[in-house]
Length: 208
Length: 208
DNA sequence: CTCCGTAACTTAACACCGTTAAGTAAAACC
DNA sequence: GGTTTTACTTAACGGTGTTAAGTTACGGAG
Image (cartoon, rainbow over all chains, first blue to last red; front, side):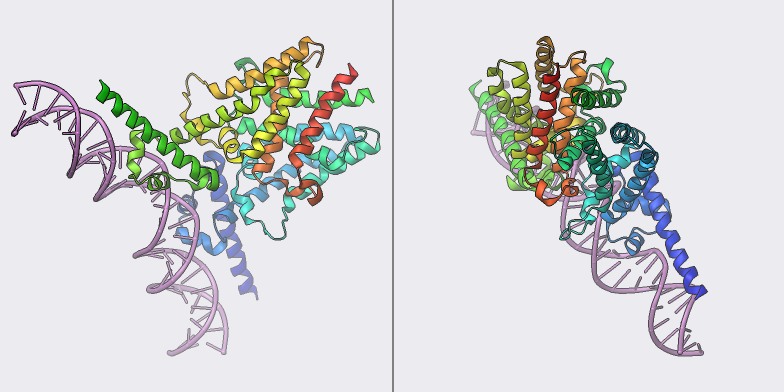
């Protein structure tokens, strides 16, 4: 029993080492430039060993994408303390942008790169990491509506739209489409745009 | 002279055939699954011939990305007829979404895929296709501001934010992140979200 | 009409990639 | 001590972008 357990421990260790290697590589070269062979070489194993611990490359990056969501949830952690739902909504938007800026590669993997989504069970279309993060947003917006904000709007559609706003901002930045903005405004563009999103949401509120 | 010209014509022809082959392949398999070798095989040339007409793979897809912008401009064409800037802004947003829905692969190449951006002159950071499309949006928003809309807001930042909103909507769709939304709302999600964006912009207006 | 240079294209190769089948060596078990 | 199982590697398949060197055919000059 103890022997079997030690074995299992060892197996976990190697799985962890593979992920660490993959993480380090993709953190400074991006997803597109990290290969199974790279990952294996870095930990002095044959490339095929990776396949004893992960189904395929997508599965490796699905695991990293999961890590990204754990990290995102840490950014969201303190938000539960904000009791006013509208304030929480604004804070969520800020935290989301902050996460994306500080963890660009993770963000890319979580919300732009196709690879990790290939590991989802396609029949039962379940993306539990996305579901839970989005659920938090829907809940917050529902509470806003309950308090009289966003009158007549559909909570889920509005949640998606708010998400789209912030995702749009950071994904244009991550994929290098911000050169259209004048050089002066490019500095902290994501923050400026997010402040504007927040101002827009606030203007809607003040009206009601 | 006539001989030289015929030669040049022939050369243009082959360049065109390469692009047509590339276009057809990427239109139904996407960028990730079309290779130089595929493109060449489809027109019965050796893969290396492509390099006589394009610097590298990025350059081929930069050309297709340019085509995408020409197509987008066709969607934008009739918008100049809309004289009221706020109406034009709303129509632009609708046209943009429509373009993205009807030309998903082009959209991907223009605003998400990294490859075509590698063909940009990096020192003089000029993305003329993006600049011109964005310029149109900035102009429209400036005219809105001149008419009293969006009081106190910076035109360029607002233009970027509006762009980010619609880009967020369609890019989440294109990269398969919409499963978080309940099945009922997934139908025409982009249109629904865009209608909401428009409603948000309108609410801001009615207030002033 | 022949020779030559050049334009247009191909062949072969390099260095990668993800992935699988078959093989090996050592440890675990009876 | 012999057998089975575990953990890993080697070798290979078919793919990728890209380059250097080679071939072939044609236009123009003598």
